[in-house]
Length: 398
Image 1: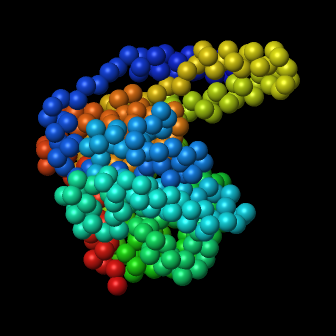
Image 2: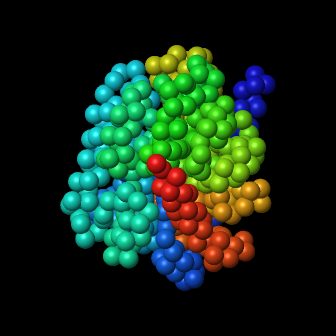
């Protein structure tokens, strides 16, 4: 009984937090909008490819759903989204990952083909600059989950030729490359033997190594092996989500700083705020207790579960909490190691108040201005830092 009481009390607190969060509104100043429009703005993780593969929408025009479409992206000042070639973890066992990856890349090429006056593919830092000068939005590609490499470096070359410029080594489960932060099975104690070869091959080919999603041991091994700076394409800080290995610890950030890499801050509420991070687990436990007491399919259980969900709305994070993550990285390792990896279209209805879609980047800029960031520092965060790393990876490639 005590355990249930504690859970319900905590849920009530979460609900109160959610309500207060919704009360906050953000309005970007003209200066903030100008900074977002005039500086190169790169977001390293937007999940449009999988979104429109599953349920097609024409994102070249305004859409009813989703977090990204061209008009909103232009409003937000976005110049170069890295579109995520997301491969669900189960493809490691089921097969078919190469097929899916190629289909998702085809989808992005088709997007550009439908609207060549709006979009252009970008395979190099120079092409990003050229496209921006022409008034075109660059479509860059990152692969989320290295499963399609399938243990063969020839596949790395294939996907490089198709435009992949970073690879997240694993996703929600360990694969043939690396252990995952989400997976309690640590079959490799970090990277697999092939994973270690792959990191070196990515350095040689000019593909950025993405350390988001991988286990702590795998991260430290990547840092030891990689001659090039690495990225965390969509991660935030464990400082604010204790025990959440998917985010980065202070020690990892220090190693990332010495490596010269960047952490691209994830906007998802569960990555940003402790209350959101713990919400789903707490709600799940309460719902499971109801099912156990009243029977999973009973009307009583369904009614009580509906009441729990109604009375305990999701505790969205706020823009200020996202800014706390940025402040912490700046204080710990420097502003030159911070970027944006929103996870738009990848985290469902969990985005913070003030950062609900790709039109919201000026709100982030306003928050940075309010906290005393200089125009030059904001320029670095919006895209300059990522461009530096990408350029270094290009230069180091053999």
